[in-house]
Length: 85
Length: 193
Image (cartoon, rainbow over all chains, first blue to last red):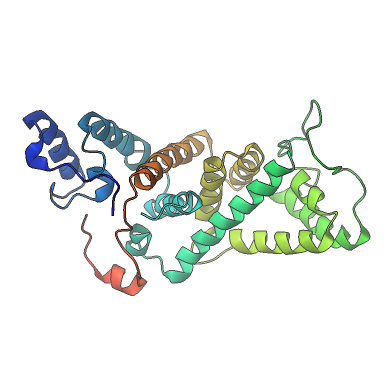
């Protein structure tokens, strides 16, 4: 179980909820089904937004390498960081 | 891990990724532990930092493996010397032979192709902050025509992103969203968030 309870979307201001909705849309899902890795950042929507932009620029939009290679790197780095998620 | 399964990798391929990750972590621990200066593609200059003498003539038992590494290094790294890491291990010939055999196995052809594997190896070395192995794998990838500056930057960008998100998931103690995965099941499923 996460150490910190996730934010309830209805408790967010319209502006902050908008950030969450943008992230969900970018990920092709809804706020309710958004992965925990994104939900865990939603208590600070500005960080969530910054990480979305970083994710897009660092991982998704630079595309010389095949997606399988990038995802394989993701698995290897996560394993070497002992990341359960 | 779900993503690589959805992209067509099977259990063997995921185990190959794990093999690269654990192998690179072990290489980094030894190289940085021995304080080896990067020597690929060029021998280092400046004050010696190595904890042990790596220039003494290796035991005769190590000569066959060192000759094999020398030939491989000329071709794959473009070096005229055996990299310091392998010379350092040569004091224990059976250790050298076992680590070299594993190295060739882990980075050799498999379900994951060798070009992807060198990218994974460089990302793992970057993540573990190894001057020695980042220089080594970067040169190997350049010689193989896999890397140029732009691709190396792409790998650094991806590593940056993974390191950040690993910290988030670890720091917030997020549960693994999937366990007991079976590749065939994942490849049959439509993608969802």
